[in-house]
Amino acid sequence: MSSTVLSVRTLLSARMPFTAEQHSLIAAAYDKAAFDVSLPAHTRAAFAKKAAWFRLLACIDEKLERGALNPSVAKPKGLGATADPFGFIAGKTWLPRHTALSPA
Image 1 (cartoon, one colour):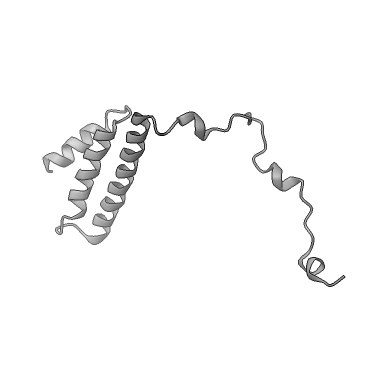
Image 2 (cartoon, one colour; image 1 turned 60 degrees about the vertical axis):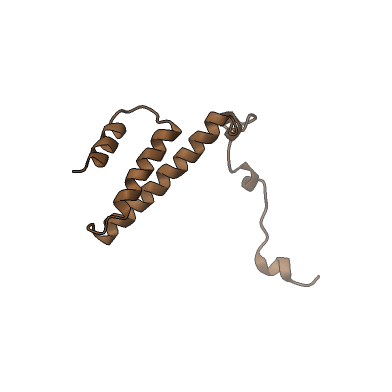
């Protein structure tokens, strides 16, 4: 195994949240593996997907570190744990299609 793969494995086994820089390093290691022509195509495709995922995580972490994203914004303030997320559907009465389009 290469030292890059070993360092990624060491980072992933730590069980602690990564910084944006660490996510970028992991993405770079997966990118390097994705462009290794000695690997089968399906393996390279899997490495490319993982690299894209870690690049996305790095981007999110950078925005969180800059304060551009606020994690509390993602959670609506007015909804409790018992709120029905599909309540807007329950109150509607649906007309059959043929009655809605028939002339009056």
